[in-house]
Amino acid sequence: MTNSEVRSKKRKKSSKHHAPNNNHHGDEEQELPSSDSAKRAKSSKPSKPSGFLEKMRARLSGGHFRMLNEKLYTCTGKEALDYFQEDPSLFNLYHAGYQTQMSNWPEQPVNVIIKWLRKQNPSFVVADFGCGEALIANSVKNTVFSLDLVSNDPKVIACDMANAPIVSSSVDVAVFCLSLMGTNYQSYIQEAYRVLKPGGWLLIAEVKSRFDPNTGGADPEKFSKAILELGFNSVKQDFSNKMFILFYFTKKEKKNSKKNIEWPMLKPCLYKRR
Ligand code: SAH
Image (tube, rainbow, N blue to C red; front, side, top):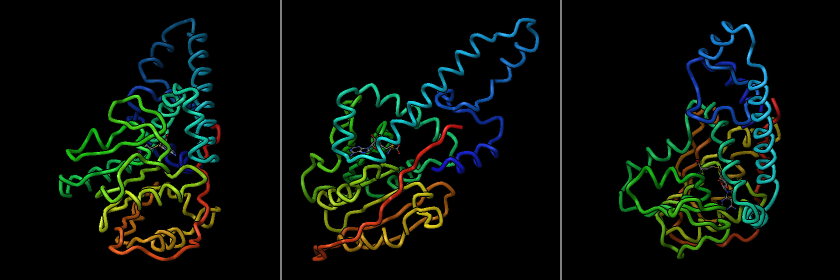
């Protein structure tokens, strides 16, 4: 999501919309809840120090989130794994900021994927590449391999998803929901190809601005072509959502012979300080 997308969404956001618990993280423009404003108006001494501290805290964690986000979009999966393994607490910090950003989106791509999964065969085995807080595993009855760089939950397997500890041709659905972050993103898709059964589904949700050639984004057709050349059929591309694109592919029954696939660069999705 680009900064301008966040901003344009924010402008439209109605005052009734609030992130659940953590909307102070990284959000310098946050409005105070109306009860606080009322208290301030009545009090002769405005509660400046705590307001100031709150603001500073929000700035610090917002800054930290942006730094981690930039790191993930500009390094390889291996580097990201080493980085988070050194200090796993950074993962929670990242996800607090991530949730704040996502609370500005009218629809969460992960929910669209969950809805889709619920309509499929419940015996489908799913691999959620870059699962974050394992929302898919916690929302469907299917067997789900949830993979991410850090595991704070016994359901999550900590790994670099370019090397998933999953048996080849054993999975019916591979999901990447906003997780093609590393500069070597093609190796994640190759790994999904390996673990998928022939005929298995590959679902990719990505930030729309990363696929806007007018602003330096990749051409979605080139991205799709590379995946077809790897050995998939394109079933559907859903551009209907304002913030993200959803690609649906199925793995071909026979392996493709194309060797030098041209993978377009996917530009990082960075957030500027607001
Ligand atoms: N799919 C989740 C989380 C999206 S945030 C959701 O939609 O809610 C992207 C996630 O991808 C982050 O948790 C990040 O740690 C993970 N990720 C990025 N690169 C990774 C890699 N190489 N291996 C495993 N996980 C990765």
